[in-house]
Amino acid sequence: MSEKLTGWTIAEAFGRPLTEIFHIINAQTRQLASNPVDRAIREGVVVGLANHTTLIARDGTEYQIADSCAPIRDQRGKVIGAVLIFRDVTEEYRSSEQLRQSEERYRLLTEHAISAIAVQDLVFDDLGAPVDFVFLDVNPAFERHVGLRKNDLIGRSAGAMIPGIDKMPVAAIYGKVALTGESVSFEQYWPAKDRYFMINAYKLGPGRTAAVFDDITELKVSENHHRLSKRVLEILNGAEDFQTSIQRILQAIKEVICCDAIGMRLEKDGDYPYFAEEGFSADFLGAV
Image (cartoon, rainbow, N blue to C red; front, top):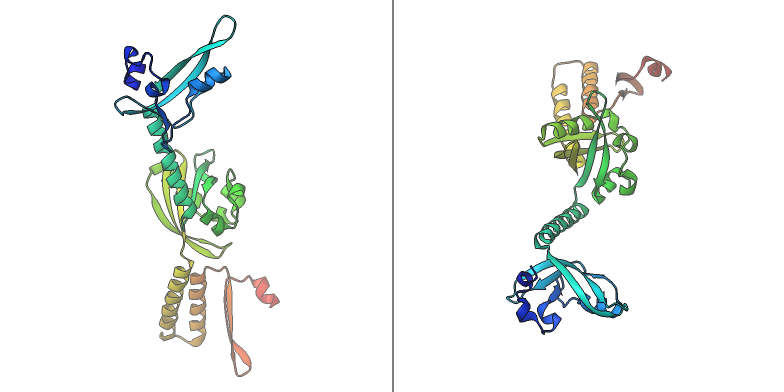
């Protein structure tokens, strides 16, 4: 194997300088690498090759290698030479480098992305239904959206960290994605932040999903204003009495802004003859 990797036969290598036969460089810098034999003989210790070591064979072929070098001692313990053991790890190195580069691209993508990105594991109840999820990774944009730091989120459940998320169908949707493998896009309003998000969810593995969030609040507000304006005009153009029109307008406003209760009182000639409400309790109305 050593003859194959170096390109020198034993007879050809005999008597030649080690650096000519065992020509190694750093794979990333292309600079000459320190020869482990020199140190093993000089210090009398076992020496391993540094990472990213490339052996250049006699014909110019390059191999990624891993090796170790140990001193040879005589009966009195004096170092009289060294034994060098090395092996071809080119395929292992290539796979490792591809993985490293992929992880680096992922890191750069997520760190600089405008969209919020989160990776999570689903939490299931005894019947197998998704009820929560635990954060595995989030990017800086996600931190800005939720107002929480990555270190505080990782390993914690969404139910414990995100106010009001238990009232949203997010865990159920992620569960469906994890079960079917089908990616989904859905809009979600977050009352605690008064923000709208477009969420794209993808399956990463068994019980694991990734989600990409985009804040669409300005778009939704604009759409809601347009929809409400259109609805108010339709109501006002209808052949109904003014009090009924007010009530219907109030219902339309309540639906658009997703509030629990809303009221309206209109003034006329110093009095307030028109009043309408939606969602208030009788006790509250009696108190006011």
